[in-house]
Length: 114
Image (cartoon, rainbow, N blue to C red; front, side):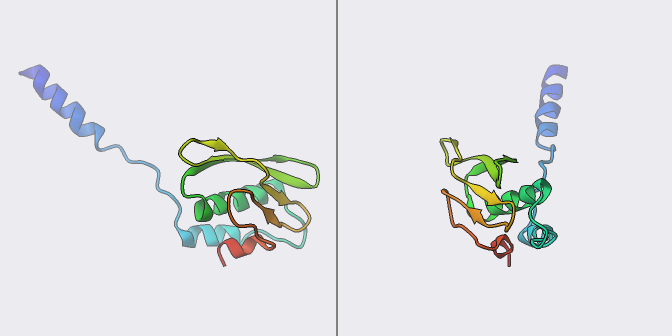
C-alpha cells in the first residue's frame, strides 16, 4: 500500500512542474524596439531580431543564435518537423536588413513587430 501511495504522489507531482512561458507579441515588440538601426546592428541586437523573427514567422523550429559572417550576422537555427538546419538567413550589420530563405525578408527589422 505504501508503494502505491508513493507512486500516486510521484505521478501527481510530475504534473506540477511548470514550463517556461513563451514571450507574448507585446513583450517581443517591446524588446525589438530597443534595437537602434542608426549605429548598425550589434550581435546582441541581431539576437533580438532573430528571436523575434522566429517567434513571428517560424511555426515549428528553433532559434539558436547568430554568428559573425563579415558584413552580416548569420542566423543559426532549425525549422520544420524534420529540424532542417537554416541556410541563407542573414541580418546585415550596417542596416539590419533581414534576408531569409525560410520566410519573409524585411528591409527594416522593426517591421517584424510594428
